[in-house]
Length: 214
Image (cartoon, rainbow, N blue to C red):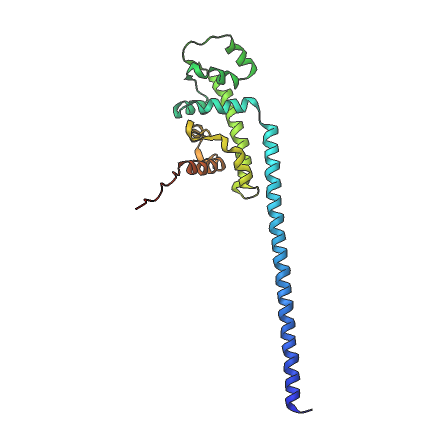
């Protein structure tokens, strides 16, 4: 066989070998990409499942007294919120009497229902302590749920959409902002702080006007 044919055959074999390597490489890349996509899908699925589990846990552990305590605490300003956090006596308007009684223990509520407030109400130290416990329990529970979002182990969109009602710009309510400030703010409740700040920022973004015609 002439040298030219030998060289040509050798070159063809080498070229086929290169093509084989390219094909194997492309196949391996496709398989790796499929694996990565599968892992991403599994991760996303687990984050959504975790969100559902957390929401179920939230619903099953949410108490009426905690929900009412949250509403009551939202009616307080920063100074009275500090008194509440420090378990000190403070005064409230009698218009909030229903919420006030609703977050007390049954024994304390029974004593209060015998009264007919016609003016501002003096919240006692004991009552302040009871309401503080209910508010803290509510916030601690919520912080646990939202921490899963902050640490990227649960679906953010699914959880945030269920708690948007806690932020009400029209009423000036940003999830017990004054009480959280009294309790240490973001250092105490970092996940709630991140959640409230994000929704607050969205509400504060004004829609741009139309461009001038000419």
